[in-house]
Amino acid sequence: MITLAIHVEESHGSRVVLESGALQKSRHYLGHLGEHRKTALITDARVSALYLKPVMNALAIPASGLLVLEVAEGENSKSFSTLNELAGSLAQKRFGRGDLIIALGGGVILDLAGFLASIYMRGIRYISIPTTLLAQADVCVGGKVAVNHAGGRNLLGNFHHPEMVLVDPNFLKSLDERDLKSGLAEVVKAGIIGDETLFQLCETRLDDVLRHTMDQWDEIITRALRVKKRIIEKDEKEKDLRMTLNLGHTLGHALETATHFRLLRHGEAVALGMHAAALIARHRGLLSPRGLGRIRSVISTLLPDNAWKTTPNTTILDAMKLDKKKRFDRVPFILPKQVGEVATIWDVDRTEIAAALDEVKKHGPQDI
Ligand SMILES: NC(=O)c1ccc[n+]([C@@H]2O[C@H](COP(=O)([O-])OP(=O)(O)OC[C@H]3O[C@@H](n4cnc5c(N)ncnc54)[C@H](O)[C@@H]3O)[C@@H](O)[C@H]2O)c1
Ligand SMILES: [Zn+2]
Image: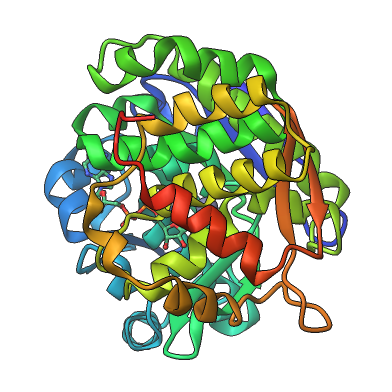
């Protein structure tokens, strides 16, 4: 069992417990939930079908104290209307300040339920049980919670850290290949930002991961979370350093927006964004040819199919103008200097990005 304490200045932070089989021991980790307060478990339809029974058995919350709230699976549930419905359900059952939310699911559920917890009665406590690799290796720490809005992705958001995070890699056994690859993109990202050993693990074990024959989940997820922990403990509110966690995201978010959240998983868009960032870094002489080769070879396994490529560069570049990190009309680009080190660059221009996009469009899965 590995525990990670996330200390952040302006709030209480989180305690993360990571162990294969952690769910079975959740009573031990989480204490006797529901005995003195009401608990709402928020999940999506797919996770509910797969895991609601085992999770309820493991948590052993008395039925009288538990409200199960199920939303449709997918990014569309990260919306103001779903948030509104969930808040209505809590109010109807007279949830108060001392009550608790459990978020069970992938990044969509953690973002949605965490945001609800952050604003319901000015903030109530919540616990996260992430079930996708993306949520276990990235979303579950850092305290960023949000829903989408027509005006932009994650436009309505907050910082609110879960009191406790229970990471059980056994959930990953039922994850399909696309979602596994999507999560791996964030793991690779963490390696490039700040952990060469993690990147090497990706270089050598990716095939095993995709065949579900990999036995090093604990190490991989812990290393990815440690990179994020190091950064957010220094810069919780993204004044500066935390921006480096956005490697691949400046273009990635624009790609998701330009394809209307329909063609690309989050991690697939991030993989494309990291490819472009590596090309721009090489072009500027920041990254060596060998560094570019290593990054491209790992990313090539994670690339999506070709459907997104019909989206014109101008549409993608225009979507970038919505980036929340924009300052004085400039968007920050995180560029790799080598595996394990990145730099934040503010003067990457449209021509450079368009050239990188043209190159990225030449490649599909496994052909770099
Ligand atoms: N807050 C943050 O710091 C942060 C960071 C990165 C991404 N995100 C957000 O995370 C979201 C993407 O997360 P995601 O990829 O986990 O998406 P998701 O929550 O939609 O999950 C992907 C799919 O996997 C299914 N699923 C979940 N667990 C499963 C399991 N164990 N077995 C089988 N299927 C399972 C879900 O039902 C869903 O269909 C995006 O909205 C993104 O903005 C947030
Ligand atoms: Zn991300």
